[in-house]
Length: 193
Ligand SMILES: [Zn+2]
Ligand SMILES: [Zn+2]
Image: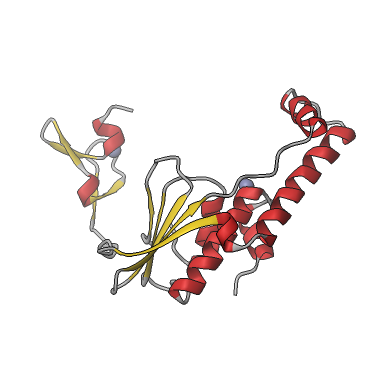
């Protein structure tokens, strides 16, 4: 079982977003029983925040494996789908962080202006640690609106042959190749980047 320390190691730092991703993933693993060693589970994420790193480390739904789909909606919504049943869990984050004290607001303002004094860092770090702890200690129902549904799972990732771009001579996956002036080229060469 991947613990929060492992997730922090993968991500590089501990932060509230990572903690939320940890809780989302923990719930999904409990509800949909077990992580995806292969492609038996698919995740659809609607943001690309720190939380998604926790999700990849914990659930085995990863960008590289092709069982992680990113929709750029800027929403804290995570949907997990089991293959082949299509049993799915949609998790929407409803948690709101406790209000900041005047002291914290002032410390954040100074931090944003580049102040890295010990006094400011202490307040900023303790606020962050407090948020992480609050997320880790909260009940699922305080954090999430959860719905169970059935969704047609996306097709499994395919491996395509590579061909060579006529301009840069680098390999490109066939379905991504374009035709420009009668030559088969990669997207950057087709768009003249
Ligand atoms: Zn982070
Ligand atoms: Zn090219």
